[in-house]
Amino acid sequence: MKKLQLMGLKKKFSKKVPKEPVVYPEIHLVSLADEILTLIFKNLDKKTLCALSQINKRLQAVSQKTLYRAIRVSSTLKLLQLCRTLDRNSVEQKPWLYTIDSLQLDIDIGNSANEFISVSIGKLGYSSSIKSTNYKDLLNTFNLYKNLMTHLLSLNSISLTQVSPRLNFPIECSLYYKVNDRIDCPKNYTYDDLRRDSIKTVRLESQDGISIPLRSHLLWSFGLIKELILRNMNIDEESLVDTRNLVDASSGNWIIDPINQITQPITGFPTIDTIPKHKKSYHSPIEKLTLNATTVSSSALHFLRNYFHNVTELCLLNIKNLHDLASITYFPNIKALTIDLDSKIFWNFLNDFPVQFDSFFSVLCSFHKIQTITFVNVKFFNLSLIPREPVNELDYNSYKVSIYRLFTHLGRIENVSFVLTTPKRITANTRYPLFMNRDWLSILWPFVDTGCKVSIKYDEGSYEFEG
Image 1 (cartoon, rainbow, N blue to C red):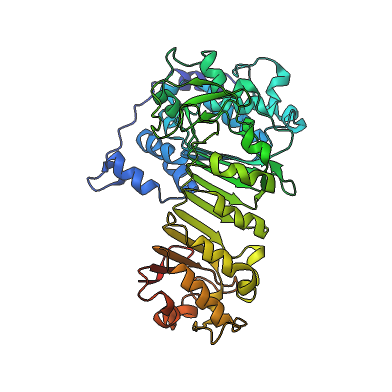
Image 2 (image 1 turned 120 degrees about the horizontal axis):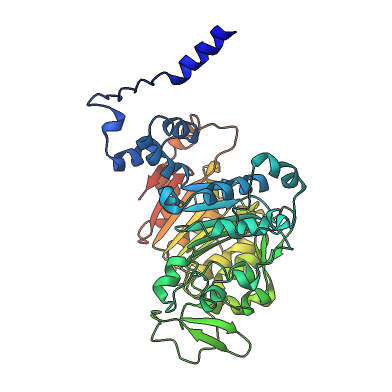
């Protein structure tokens, strides 16, 4: 026994031999510059990046910038763990905090409490490092969300995929409230500060089976939004009339009370001279809008022209009815348009074209500001039909005539793109022979001498035809 004790003491007081530094050869991954390593790491998967981060401190610092560039939170527990990681040390000890560009939350942040968190919180050893010391607030998913947003200093994109009807961002979360109450904001808050604190891309997706109306409180904490993506949402009259605590992109004012026209100017905002000073309508800063399975009520059509005045790119996916398709004509400054031909209303596209779509595309293509139209999920090229002119005025009951009429209307646009969709049973190795023997010049002959540039490509980006 004494022998064993003496052996333990000997091991305890023995001197540690310093490890020799690792010498790498001249041609090695570590010898590359950080900029080159960053370009290489962008093409690697997360598992490989995690392995690289455990080699040495230099590779850990570079790989973490790529690992944390886009964060996805799939549960409330993951959100709690992320807040704990971000709140543990200062920003100086985590330089990768400045590289976080995208955040996706696949949870309902409107949920007030979660029983699973109350069971697991002790196992995590989570202390009161969050600003709120109340235990019940630790269980509040929305408070975790607010704590998370205080750490993400360079966030440019946020995605909320489980928006519920009970989600209501309080007035304290609005950027206008933070500016006027001087919460982490300078005294002279200018346009440059607003642009720095704004999130450029916002994606809102409601829970499955629920169509939630768009409201100002869902947007007022993000500042100057340049791209808005809505999925399974609803735009009604109140969505476009209630503009409290939002920024008017034309006048450069905070909208305090839209009914009584009470506003507050923003210092240094680049206003447009052509806009009258006493303008009553609101212009949002959104420049790119995507409506995915999102309906527009008839009462809101009158307000689309002013609210989305600055939208130049419009994308319509999973269009539910003709009413939503006709809403395109209420966007005055569209230059690029994307239409999903796999939507429900286009399932019998060629068959219903003479009755439902001929007049619509005739009006649509007459808009002079539209420069580019892109059709995604195109399937009618699978038929390999050669368009032909109608024999007489009653000759419309033919797929070939329908394609001819469509191409004739699209010939007035500068650029037209078709993104092909192949059946799911055709893999990536066999999809190309489906279109390899097509005579695209014969199929696209109605575009000849129109000045329109036509391109046909696959969903992965490779081109089949361009001319």
